[in-house]
Length: 448
Picture (cartoon, rainbow, N blue to C red):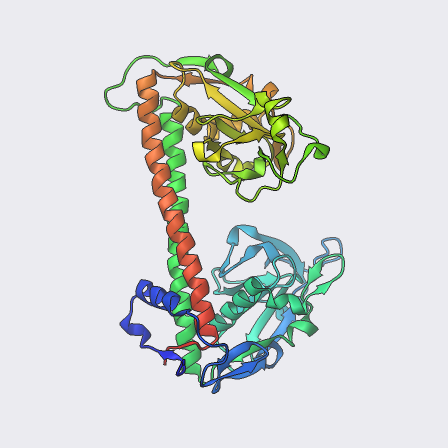
């Protein structure tokens, strides 16, 4: 029988040790252990209370945007997109005209909690005044404590409610789902009994957030370094030791066979059979076909579509509906464990000619900014690219000898492996943070 909450001195553990401890502590406890009670926010300690957002915070929606009618002095403002989980994206700050009255009503103060009213409802970040003066638009709620409720704690409560779907109980669904002020005020929130306990919970979760942010920044930095290395190594601007000689300019069609997937009709889909590859199944070097719901019969795969069955070693790329920012992520090698599958529309596969083009070198080229620019300059679409063999056949690039291609690809592949390891660590840390929120925001683990 569970005898109550686990208590610990947070300062005696590192962030990583505390995270691991919290994760392991989320076991198979009884639904209502001794010392706990059932409430609107779930099972919490008996000495905790339940309040509401409206009781603990002053809530105010921002300024309505109307660029034709707004008058006054131009001022910087935040919109919905600038508020990400736990951070403000300063690159997404706009300018709006505000009256003297607006300047008083909508000016942000350090410590204000900004919450998305629409879009990803509940997404929240604290304004820590990275710039001296800023305002906010109507798509955001601004929260200021009335009775000292910890703002960091509130941000994490909202994140837990958003992830669990609890906030959806308070959403108004018209043409666009949103969280109106009158309903937001009624959202129940857990109330640890002392300011010290609120601060301890908030600090522990903030430490986890800081670890996540540092890993995110490191991943971004490593990706930028990789792109810089690709720009130099794949174009011959930087040569590896031991290699010399001129590179040859070749059309991609001279050194590689490629094929676009057929447009399999919906009427030909079956409930099971041979999997169909779509562009959505391709992501960062990996094919995700486990949960596909598109198949063709084995008879079709051996007959009309036999020519489109993929082989191990093929390189596949998504060719439709890809944002320019995610273009480099939609390339993958076909592995034995992926087979069998058939190509479908919006995908292209490549088979490099042996002795002319190393497969690993081609893979790196297809994920490079150089290839993206070549395709982007001729493909259709604006926000999203759509291209096919008629575009690829126009692509030419410089090639070194096969040994130099292999050496270049090996260096870039090592960098890919380092980035993948960091991304795996980041994913695990995010999962641990979710476990921490469950344990700490329900009082299953007490820090004081």
